[in-house]
Length: 96
Image 1 (cartoon, rainbow, N blue to C red):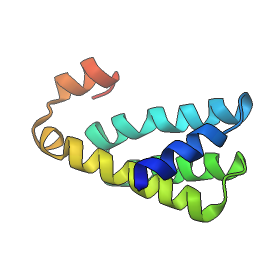
Image 2 (image 1 turned 30 degrees about the vertical axis):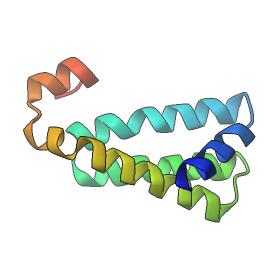
Image 3 (image 1 turned 45 degrees about the horizontal axis):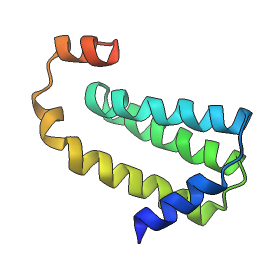
C-alpha cells in the first residue's frame, strides 16, 4: 500500500523548480542518515516534507510519503550505519 501511495505522489509531482527542490531534499537524506547526527537526518526529512508541500502535495500525503521513506531508509541501512567509518563517509558521501 505504501509503495502505491508513494508512486502516485511521484507521478503527480510537477516538473521544474519544485522537482529540483524535491530532488535536492531527497539527496540530503542518505548522507544525513549514514554520516550525520540525528538532528541532521530529522532536518533532511523535514526539508523533504516541506518540498512536497511546496509542490502542492496535500499535507497528509506528504507526511505519509516522508514516513515511508524514513522507514525504508532505517530498515535498509541501520546495520551499515552502525559500522560505517569516517573514511567510508568521505568516499561515499563526500563528508566525514
